[in-house]
Length: 205
Image (cartoon, rainbow, N blue to C red; front, side, top):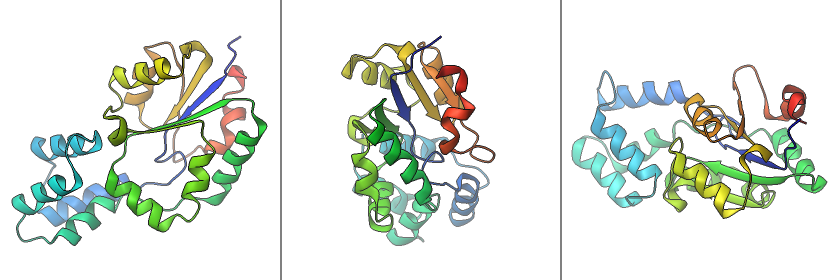
């Protein structure tokens, strides 16, 4: 029977709701594309990994899509971000107060998204303070599902993979973590909710 000591959470579609499909449709319409070309995917990944600045990121898009303003590009980029239900914060706060587990956030994100969240989610700092460690991809320059991001978290916190449960909505990310011996919950944001963490994963607790 595994003894889970550390809970590692993704952010998007675990705590804050995302509209991935809507964001993609909106971007393709705005950029007048049928699909996202490889160079756009690459630049988005570099930005998420903190390897280019916000200024360089926006500059790339304004150069390639001169008809669009900076504001239109930023709005399209942030279109994916939706609401953060407060009952999930309450769940997290109770978990934090219980002191039963080490709590870590591990999110693929970027400066523009975090700025948007800080401006619109009044309890962002309270949310952040619930975690023992708070890792954002653009700050640590590592990105899921690359194995080195999980190695970083394990080494940085002297963790045994079998004592950790990692929760993420992207199967590619949970598969990569599982390959390292970490217990995973690939949460389905359409049918499951983080507040059901313990009932859904009762075999681990």
